[in-house]
Length: 249
Length: 249
Image 1 (cartoon, rainbow over the protein chains, first blue to last red):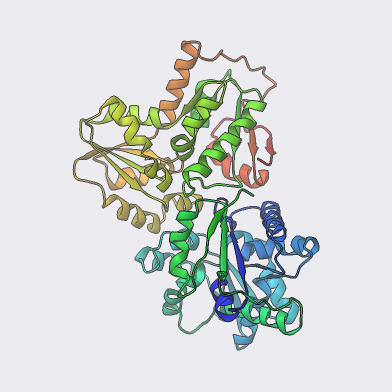
Image 2: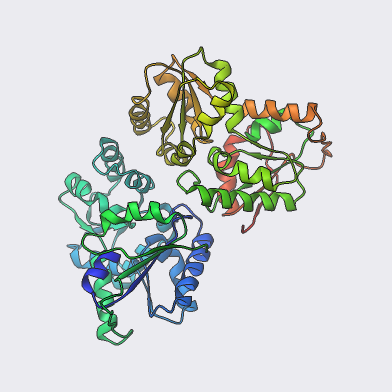
């Protein structure tokens, strides 16, 4: 999501907060995720951000409501843009949501889909092993393919579109498309960037004017910055990663 | 470890603290694990415990030193008892340690083994996918067997003894023994109970006298107590689980 935003809005400055000490969120309870999301937002608000994107599906599913009531700046999660994109790609069939257990239990995706299309059939499928497999870098490993086949065997016959409802899952998109090329696979990063474009267009937030000497991205993490830099760098493409600072939330 | 202790010392009262909101520890940096271990210990000390057992290998490996300097009660980790037991079972071959990445990086097991036997060959093998597979309950799943085979293929030829160096791994002991019945597989729970017996014998801590109306175990967790109860109950055997309280560390 960050790469999509930084590529599309080069005049903006991004402050990325990664709660690396307390990940993963997808196995935590609703109240813990909501509490951690609020603490993370408080940190960002102290740094005078003009808007917040929750680029974690679980935090979007479980922390969005509390955060929108709490923050004095606009807040965007990844659930609604992803749901909207799935509806745009679907040919009327069932929409499947692959997500962490906490996101599935929240019912956030079916809720967002039903706001636009109350009669649409939705199937939610928890895929808890995808996050550790991606973290392990086993993107093309036969074990990951077997796990993916095990999960996808549960898909109902009328599914035509699948939402990759966790930030890690798009890294498996190639493998998943290979297993089921007949389905539309939805990654919400571009949809999030599109929503932010609307924020600027409608004056929800003011456009930025980044000085040439300021990096486009500053990173703050809650665990070892060196380890984070190693993991994050391959994702960044041509976008330079600025400083990485460590804080305790 | 808790079940082994509660079964062996029925007159004692145990206060179990599970940092369920911030698990797993095995992927976190040394300073974060040490900081979380100290905060957990502070909570236990406020509740007037007479001794502390760190029943997590990663917290033992990375938090033990700081905690021993900090706590005014005796502290026991799982590393030394496990290393001692491995040396007792080995026929002189190489000792392998299966553990989380953070425990492996710490070098705690080789350190403990070399204190007793400086010339002993040790192989450390990170097995990061075992924790999520166990959490998923895939104990007899073909995926888990394939992952185990992938990891065990790395074992050097002269290994004769393997330490299950993470609290989750003993749940895979049956599968691992099935794959390599020629090796001695070490689970440190009984070794920890044996060390605590020595604490009582040598007066390091006083023996308890639990009133019949007090439960042997009280649990405190940092995430949803109901979810914890569901996961913990199958482990408890005939030992009743008392109240489960939630705290924020």
